Amino acid sequence: MPETITFYVLSALAIGASALVIGQRNPMYSVMLLIASFGALSGLYILLDAPFVAVAQIIIYAGAIMVLFLFVVMLLNAPQEDGAGWDRLHPLRQPGVARFGLLLALLLVTQLGWALARSTSLDQGVGVLGGGAVVSSVRELGRVLFTDYMFAFEATSVLILVAMVGAVVLARQEGKS
Amino acid sequence: MDFLAPYLRPGVIGAVIFVAFNALIIASAILVLAERKIMGFIQQRYGPYLTGPHGTLQPIADILKLLFKEELRPKGADKWLFTLAPVLSIVAAFTAFATVPFGGETTFFGLLDEPIKLGIADVNVGLLVVFAVTSMGVYGIVLAGWSSNSKYSLMGGLRASAQMISYELAYATSIAAVVLLAGSLSIREIVDGQSGYWFGVLPRWFLFLQPLGFIIYAIAGVAETNRAPFDFPEAEQELVAGYNTEYSSVRFALFPQAEYINMTTMAAVATDLYLGGWHGPFIPAEYGWIWFLLKVAFILFFYIWMRWTVPRYRYDQLMQFGWKWLFPASVLNLLVTAALVLYFNA
Image 1 (cartoon, rainbow over the protein chains, first blue to last red):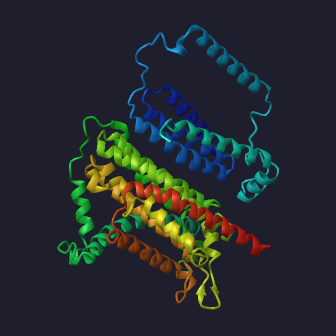
Image 2 (spheres, chains in turn red, green):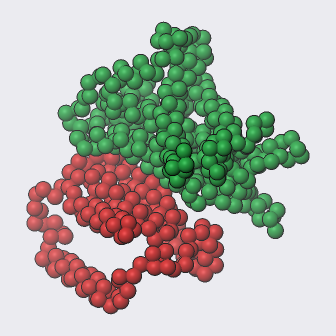
Image 3 (cartoon, each protein chain N blue to C red):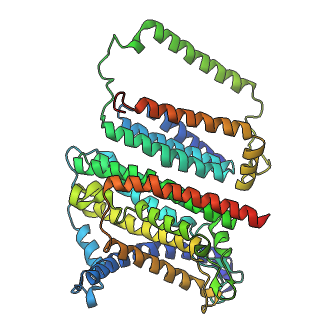
C-alpha cells in the first residue's frame, strides 16, 4: 500500500511538473520544473527496484544536462519568452502548419488511447511489486549492455559523436579559421 | 529494562542518524574556527582570540550575529528562486552524507545483542548516490547567482555551472578507477576491501594503488566544493562576493555552511575510498570511527592549508587545466587501472 501511494504521489509530481514546464513563460522556472520532473521519475525507478537507473537519471539528466540548459538560459538571460504579442506572420502560426500540428497531436492521442486499451495487465505491478526477477545489479546491467545490446550501444555512441562534431562545425564562425 | 528491548535497536539507529546530522553542523562550526585560526597562523597573527578562551567561541558569535541581521532581498530579485537557492544548497549538502559510512560494526559497549554498522543508509549504489546528490548542490549556487538580479552574482553563478560541469567528469572518472579495484559500488564494501596490510607493514589503502587517481580526486574535489584556489564563483577581488553578493542574514549563512558540510563529505568520501576508512593500527576495530575522524580531520586541515597557501587560478586557466590535463589524466588512469585489474584477475 505505501508503494501505491508513493507511486501516485511521484506520478502526479512528474506529470504536474512536466505540464508546468510547457505552461511557464519564464524559461528559468521551466528548467527548474524539468529537474523536479526528473527527480520524480528517478523516484519511480527506485519503486521499480532499479536504483542504478534512478541514480544515473539524476547524475546524467538532472546533474549534467540540466546544468548545461541552465547555463545557456542564464547566458542568454531571457527573463520572458516573447510570446506576449500575437505575431500573425510567424511561420509557425500559418493555418497549414497549425492544422498539421493538430493532426499530429490527434494521432498521438489516438495512439496512446489504443495502447492503453490493448494492454491487459495495467493492474499488475512490475519489477519487485509484480514478483519479477530483480536485475538491479550494475554488473549484470553492464554485461547485458556490452553483449546482447552491443550494436545498439555502439550505434548510439557513434550517433552522439556525429552530433557533437556537427555542433562544433556549426558553432565555428566562418572566416575566422 | 526488558520492556525497552524491542525499541532498543531502532532507537540506537535513530540516535546514530541524529548524532551524524548534528556532527555535520558541529563540524562546520569547528571548520569556521579552524579556518580562521590556521589562516592566522599562516599569516603570522593570532586569529580570533577574544571570544571565549583563545577565541574558541567565535563560531557561535558569528552565527548569532548573522541570525540577528536583517534579511534583505533586492527589489529586482526573483522572489521564489531567491529563497529556494540557499535551501537547495544546504539540503543537498546534508543529503550527500546519507550514504557515507563512518565506522565498522559496533555493539556500543555491549548495549546491543547484534552489532550495527555505523552509517546512515547502506545502499548498494551508495557511491553513485553521493555523486548524484553532490552534483545537485550546484543548483543552489547557480540559482542564487541568477535570482539576485545582479551582474556580479550572475557571473558567479555562470562560473559555478561551467566549473562544476568541467570538474565533475574528472571527479567521476577518478572514482570509477577505485570502483574497478574494489569491484563494488557500495562504499562499505570498498572500505572493507582495504583492510589488512601488504608485507605486514604497508596498509592496503587504495591510495597506494591509485596515487594519480587520489591527486585527481583531491583537485577535482576542491573545485567541486568551490574552495580556493578554485573559488571562482565567489572570487572576491573580481566579483565582490560572487553568487552570494546580495544575500544577508541566515540565508547568507546557509551558503558557507553548505560549503563546509560539502568539504566534510568530500573528506569523508576520500577517507573511505583512498585512505582505508575506519581501518587502522593500534585502535581496536570496535573504535574504528576514531581513525575515521582523525583521517577526515587531516584532509580538512589540508584543505584549509591549501586555501591560505596557493593563490587563485585565472578563470580560463582553470577551464584549460580541467579539460586539457585533469580529464585526460583521469581517463588514462581509468584505462590503465582497468587493464591491470583485468590482467591480475585473469
